[in-house]
Figure 1 (cartoon, helix red, strand yellow):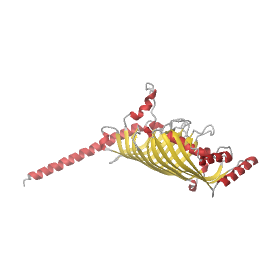
Figure 2 (figure 1 turned 120 degrees about the vertical axis):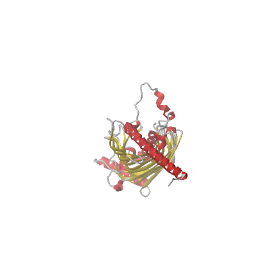
Figure 3 (figure 1 turned 90 degrees about the vertical axis):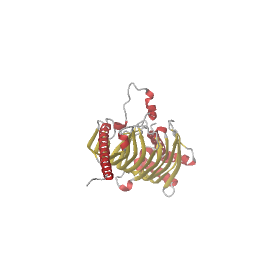
Figure 4 (figure 1 turned 30 degrees about the horizontal axis):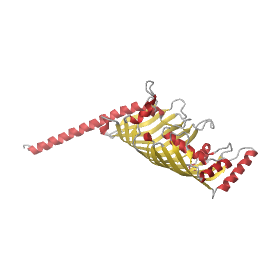
Length: 372
């Protein structure tokens, strides 16, 4: 029986569709293999990967370990059990790499705040050696260079962050260690390396306490938007029931026995525009008790300071309002001279506990985050 003309056209259209789909599938797979090669190159010589596989919808990195260079305070810069990368097809052949979604599960990252106050993250991946022939001002033109990678959405789940603060020397002989655990985050709109587009951030995790038990952990939450290249940000940051013992280097102004127990709550609204920072907030100390040294004089001094604390506290709470106000390019941040700030200064002189130390530490951390 003869096949009608319409039927033949339908068969040709079907065959053409099959060929087109096969071609697109082949192009997609070839592009994913291209991405796999680019990822291997980007990870650098200090990275070890258990497996890097191409899936039907992306590339999976399993068992990543990035060893630290000599002088880094942690044996590794990062380690991740699983990373899933889903690219955008149109970007795999031209223009900057565009990642639709990047998911990091069960990872560990170490950060260093150096003696100059700068925050350093993954130097093995992000730091680029300067060329001797490059002019000294080349770094300042980074914001004008083209983007090479765009990540539409970055998701973190079950990540541990070890922060080593080396800016407290010579008071401390080694970097002070803070640990964030069970960190989850969603970051939208990463345009690398310029970071000249607004980045949306929603992050929460636990700030581990000194005792090791879960009931000593505090809660951290940060949300808002920032544009690092333009030094613009609007962020809301909260710390809830943080163990004061892990913050002793920022709180104590006298060489006493330390802090026996207590909790800290902090709420702050960060508004940064063209290098100008204004960040009002509140610090609350609850149940603060000072420890004493071994000698009788230390015991007597601690008892006197604790008596002053008990007088100042209202129902076991000391609340201080503050405002960080200044420019990132100014070497000195200022805390506003309000009645509450004068109270905080008096607290530091009378009992050796400086709320301003915590506030200034947060301000310097913001400066370090924006590369100043």
